Length: 199
Image (cartoon, rainbow, N blue to C red; front, side, top):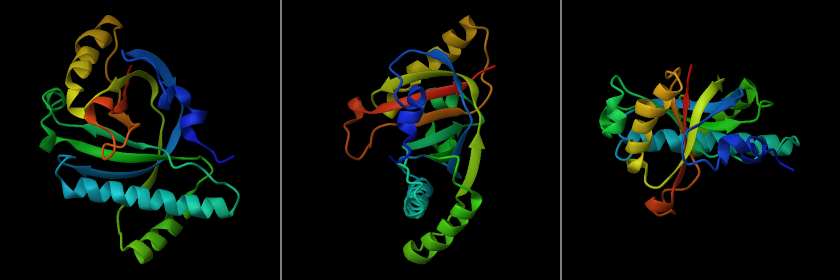
């Protein structure tokens, strides 16, 4: 059976709680690419996501040939801005991001470099995709059902209520896992895992 991060780390990719709860997140490995700007309108965002998937599927095909097949994970993102209020008021042009796709720990730098050559040659994509390890540790996490633009209230509740009540502070970048395809799913039914490392 191919490795499937959604099944192996169910607590991270299929949470049931729609309000904030604490959990420990183990170290994971990702394909990563950085950028800034509005994800709805910036060409750089669309290009980054396209590059990530091109790399992920190229690496998957190579891994399959060597008996280490895996299911390509969902798109994920780390988000930040100079002023946190940019998220609660959805001031997207000032957002900075690192988009991610989870990779099994068995995949090494050599596989990424091999994919880089292939993607450049076959798809004419030359993008600064890299391998990155992320160990978020203790996090607050919730499942948000609905439009991305409706995340403001649940994020405000995290910062104004949940963290205060638990004596915690943000200790890392806001992390989102996109469980639905916005091109095929109506906004009200989109599922997004919201995660915030805390300390």
